[in-house]
Length: 228
Image 1 (cartoon, rainbow, N blue to C red):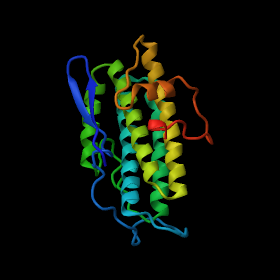
Image 2 (spheres, rainbow, N blue to C red):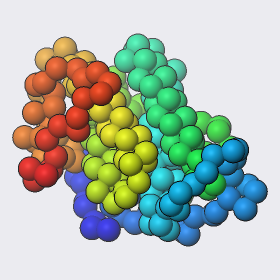
Image 3 (cartoon, rainbow, N blue to C red):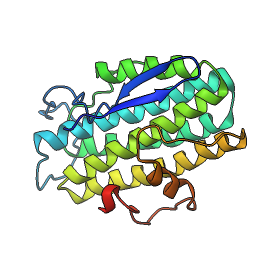
C-alpha cells in the first residue's frame, strides 16, 4: 500500500494524520471461519484472498470509527448532522458485517463500546479526531469532512482490490453514502461562512462531489481518482 501523509490545519497547531488503510494499518492476517464466523446456509463459490479479507475486516472497523466519532461529537455539540450520519454509519457497519458473515470471517468488532478497536491505528485516529473535534463546532464539522474523505479514499482502494461482485457492490454503496456525508458536512461548514478546503483528497475531486446533487441508491460510482 502506498503511504500518504496528510497535513490537517488547526487554528492553533497542525495535526498530522495518515490514512490507516493506505499506511498498512489493516493489521495481521485475517481469521477464517472455522465455525467462528456466522456463515449460515450460504454457499461460498470463491474465497476472498488474504488481502481482500483483511481489507473487509478493516473497513468494518473504519465504519465503526466514523460512527463512534459522530456519536461522541453529537453528545458534545448536539448538532443534528452528527446524529443523522451516525445512523447511516451503523448501517455501513452492518453491511460490512453481512459480508464478513457470508465469507466466514471473524468479526473484529468483539466489543462495540465507543472508542474500542482491535486495530491500534484506528484507536489512535479516534483519540486524535475527538481531541480535534472537541475544540469547537467548526473543528468538529471539519473532522466529519476528514472522515468522509478518508472513507472515500480507502473505499476506492478497496474497490480496486476486490474481485468479488457482491463485495464490490457493498463498497460502492458505502462510497456513495460517504460522498453524501461529505456533501452534508461541507454544507454545514459553508453555513458558517467558511470555505471548505480538502484535507486528504485533491481539492478538485472534493469540489466535484460537493457541487453535485445528493445521490440515491443504484447510481454509479462517479468519477474516480485520476479519471479512473
